Length: 324
Ligand code: XMP
Image (cartoon, rainbow, N blue to C red; front, top):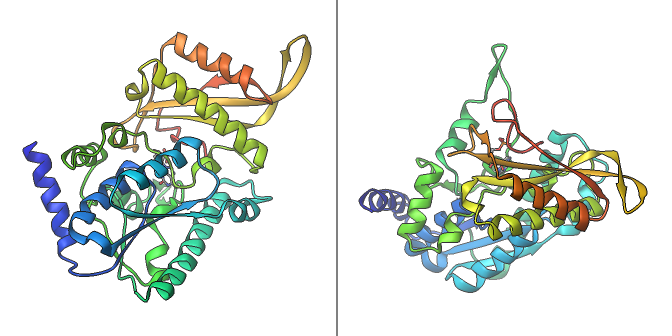
C-alpha cells in the first residue's frame, strides 16, 4: 500500500529525528501503542523499553494478549503488577471523575517509581516518552467541548496528560497526525498479525469505568465474566469485526427476578456495542437478535449475581461510548 508506506515513513522520520536516545513506552498492547512501539523499535532497537501496568481492571483477554506479545515480539516488555494498590486507592470512590483521576494519578505514581528504580539499577536515563497518541486525542485535549460559552472537559482521559511533565520527559508521538484506520494500515504495513491490528479499543482506566459507582472485587469478577462471554460469542458468530467496540457495564442497581423457582434480587449487566471510525462519534450496533439472545441467556445463567441484561441503543452524541 503506497499510502501506508508514505505514512509509515513520515512516522518513522519523527523517531529518527530524536537520535540516539533512551525511550520509555507506557505500553497497553492496544493497536496504537503496539504500532507506535513496533515502528519505533525498527529505529531504536534496545533503546526502547515498554512498561505495562496491570492495575487489576483488565479483562483476562488483555493480560493474555500482553503475554503473547511479550513472547512473540522483539520488544522489551515488562509487566508491573499493582492490582492491590489500585483496589485500595479506589476504595470508597464512586464519582466517575474522582475514579478517573485516582486511576490516572495512581498510574503516574506507579510508573514514575518503577522508572526511577529501573534507571538506578540499569544506570541509564530516559529522555523520551513514546505514546500512541492519535489525531482525535490531540484535538480532544486542545479543544474541549464548549458549553454555554465555557469550555468543559467531558472526561479526563488519563493517557494524554500529566506523566511527561512530572517526569521531565519529552514526548514522542509518531502517530499524532493519524486516525485509527490509518494506524491499522500502518500495522498491516509492519506485518503485524491481523487480529492484533483489528483489536477493539480498550480504555486506559479499563473496567474501572465500566463498574458504575464504587468498585468491589466481586464487581470486577462480574464484568470480567460477562465480557468474556460477550467476546466468546462475538468470535463464535464471526461478528467481532462487524462492531468497532463491544463492552459490558455493571449497573449500580438491583432488580427483581426469578432464578430456579425462587425470587432473586440481583444486578444488571448492560451490553454496549458501537460502530465508529475514531470514537468521536458513534452509532449503536444493530447486532443480530440470536446473538444478543445467546449472550443474554449465557450471562444470566453463568454470571453469579446477575439476573438481567439490557442493550444500550444510544448513539454518541449524546451517549459517550463508555458509561463513565
Ligand atoms: P467515550 O466514552 O469518551 O470514549 O465516548 C471514546 C473512546 O475512548 C475510549 N476511552 C478512553 N481511552 N483512556 C483511554 O485510553 C481513557 O481515559 C478513555 N476513556 C474513554 C473509549 O473506550 C472509546 O473507545
